Image 1 (cartoon, rainbow, N blue to C red):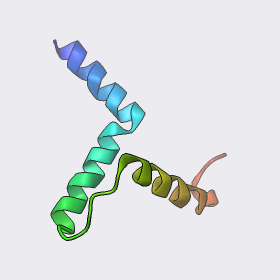
Image 2: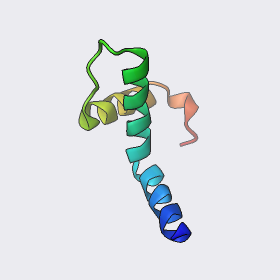
Image 3: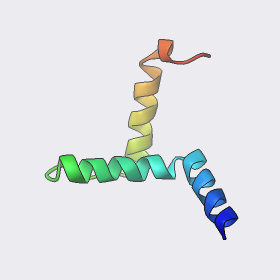
Image 4: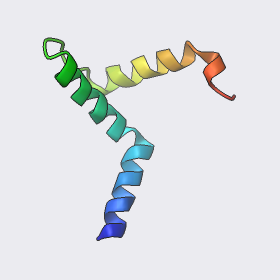
Length: 59
């Protein structure tokens, strides 16, 4: 059972599902009047932020 939980955690972290859920929780807690972004909107914003800082990446 522990192995399955660990595998599930790993796959969710690897796939980005956990990061999106953490972001949604932060938006709900810190900005209750703002709408929670869709997964697609979150991923596009994350990609734009990453591409806007080329020095933060190794490649």
